[in-house]
Image (tube, rainbow, N blue to C red; front, side, top):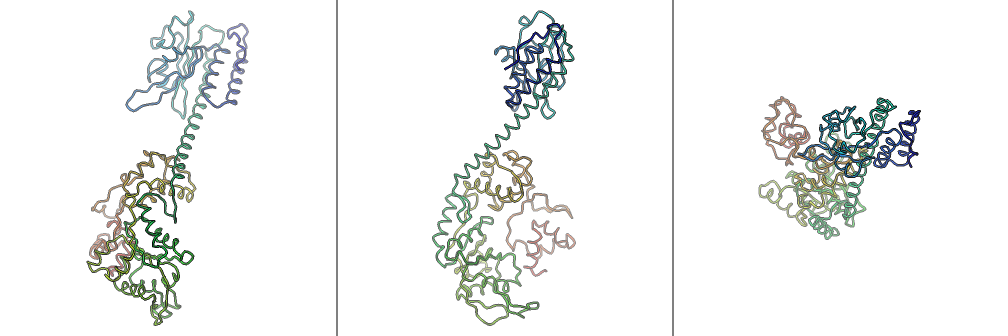
Length: 529
């Protein structure tokens, strides 16, 4: 409750005591409630009751709409009727109040009748006291920008100095700015929490993570259904689909859904093994089989005994190794490099490729009999374009994983999730996961909106062209490379790139749109290294 009103202009008024009383009462209000609306109205009330600063008002900026002129309106007032306060709308630069908004500087009008810029918009002159009336207006700032005006009337001829009123109003305007800034921070935090809760609620509504596979789209569920129907058999499974669709996770799901789940699961990326090492890596070697073979070593097939072996990118397997693999699959035995003894193995094979093996067979690059042996149970994995309803759940999963890995607290707003859902994702789940990790590391704010997301989307990066960058220059930052096969460049093209860049494999690889590892692999395949 406000203190009992005293006559501010009574003879002998102790103005210092009145100021202290006003500040004490205002700070009590702040201690009881941080809601600016309550505190600011009572502040205006106390200004009038204790210091004679009448018709006080807080003029605050209205929400700016694109293409419309900025305005500010009276939000809190004391001594004004509802109709008078409703008339208090000012454009930036309009009248005394508008000039304070635009300039960020205080304004003191000694006589409103003598000031042509004073508009009498809220209170007609006839409604004001007959004496000379002054008007004081000070900017309210948040983060160095004017967001409003604290203003009031006062009778000019008073025992109290105008400078004293001005000094106190500066303090109150600063306090008002701090309260409004706190309100903005709380509102922003509340919006972030609401957005996060909405995202989490949607995530909880999604049945996810069967065998670590996230989503419930019909295309994914169909592939999962096929997987589960064949999981208990011993038949070879061939996973088909674009790069980045999650073949390794599907292969592991085949293993987990089978009776071999407690046995080894061995994964082998055929595109990462040089031709000269295929045999020793897959089938092992005996001591003395080659220089440096000081001890015998079991290959990947032996290590997968009683379990599952996953051969990824099997289309990269050299023809010579294809025949040996076929023999192992048909007979269930292998012979180590440099050995003569047959070793019996019990292995379930899951293979994967993003290449058209039937076309490779026609071109003579893949054995037809091995193709038929692998193609017993083909399962096509859907691209992310075919399972858009899973993008949100996948994005949330990647955000959570990246936040934990990098100690961040980034969240996606609903409109950002909708933007991710609308993208075609040529790189599929791998591309989405990489984008989310980049976003978590580089985002400027904890809540990423669709507008903030745009700079991370592939459309915002430099497009790939056939033209090389200037000599000695790498590809543009963020450049997206297509998913290329191991035979994407001829030996002559590799040699030409090396010559152009004076033997620098790094620059040669960049000029061809390849990573250094991909370039080195192609050199080995071509016998140039």
